[in-house]
Image 1: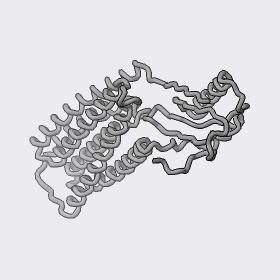
Image 2: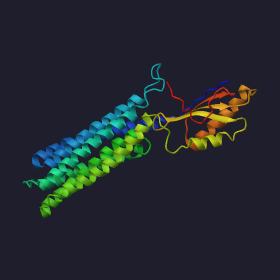
Image 3: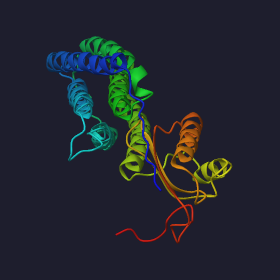
Image 4: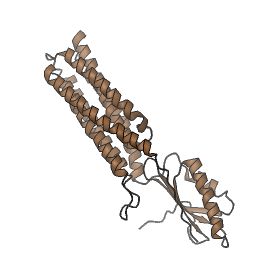
Length: 312
């Protein structure tokens, strides 16, 4: 006998609108910042400010990718994509984090060049400080827009990290401008850039690690399959649970499927009761939102928790 049941937790329309709306305004602000900084860099003669503007521009594109991914992920399921396109956001997070790692290495190289071959030039540091300060304020506004969504959504968190990198870079440009203006110290900007890049690398690798685990259908780190087995086998009527699969479809949806051994003469209505109990326990204890169970009686030769046989 078999029984399949599933249910999903959907985000409210208000929350989804909030995420896309915040991303939209973040994109507008980001491109305005980039344009303003490019103009400021040209008038001040500051290469650092132009570099910051290009960094900002790349982050605007990253947020645009995040925005597009959220829109795509809302498309309904089809016969070809029976899960829908929910993993578009995970792909976007991976792409954005990969780009951020590339930017970090680029900043490393540029900082090294400045340390080895410092080139003090006639830079109008007052313009650099003013433009970078305006850019920093705008970046902080975008960070505040994305902060709430970044706690629950990997895709938005990657965009959030891009904007945080922009804010840190703008802050470094301001400090560099102040050091040039008051003390003619040109090396501080390079060392600040190195520290910022190290932080960005750490955070980006964490996002990529989490996204890869989702794409490879790995079980969440917070869930112990052995603990689930012990808890479910304590339910009356269950003699064995085996062939368990747990994976995350995206940031919010955790799926669980398993074979459940029950007595041969158990009625279908009784398995429904057990199924409801399993479903409630998994949701409350592990935030598992989609459960598929196969009830059977001594059908499988292998009754180990995980089926280690080669899957063809």
